[in-house]
Length: 260
Length: 80
Image 1 (cartoon, chains in turn green, blue):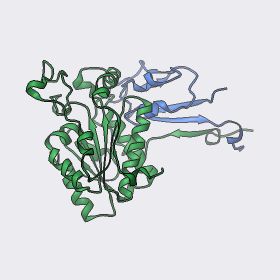
Image 2 (cartoon, one colour):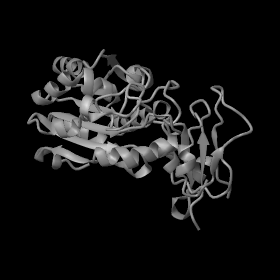
Image 3 (cartoon, one colour):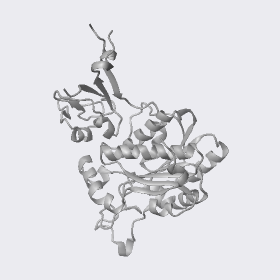
């Protein structure tokens, strides 16, 4: 009996609908694309595309609004949590997310993210930590590892003069307003699956009105690190993961009860 | 018998980063060195039999360029 193609095989994976057909400007191998894809998959799975509003940051992810197929605004210079606060308070029935890098969130926008978390704003924050300023050419960021060479720390980050990296998840987890703060990594298939689960939990937290949620995602920056994408993933696993341990830093008991 | 699958790489999106190639448990992926995409990259492609449709390549793909199909077997097969 002849079978046609659709009866012979099932589609196991296809590009999520919440991504546009746009070709990203990200470098080959950049995990920004992976993070975009995971967020889009979760939004599709939860059926939130019609009521999600994203807030893009400044940095490589400034053009995120070209790649996500739902409503998006862009907030300059770390103000994404402040803009998201406004959007969420005016339109409380919408799902509001920000998508920020480490230069944006941990440096210029540090005040905004800390206060948004302290206020317990009912928004979801996705924080991509790649240990440097990607878009501007690989300068030292607050998250650059001690000894890490960047274009503005050519001899490696010297903690005596340049201080220590900021561990954002640990920092925000001390705030009572934060309900769900976790760190995940995007360096292999297993960790990408775990990251997707965390992104889902962040949205579930917001859907239930349980307050501020943030997922920190350790990422690579092959171009500015001066490595191939594969070597970058290895560097992330060997150097970044020990300094930025993966795990759940704050899970409010009400969030812990969510079953998905 | 392991399940049979296949992938379709959308060459509009693929940037030849090789992450899928390194993660493929069957080691049946490689860059197509005989042609380049519109953006100038050698795209990933299947070079040998043995794809099981496990979809790990699509999980690591930063560009969501890969569509994965798996052949239906036994009871999952609907006769025409």
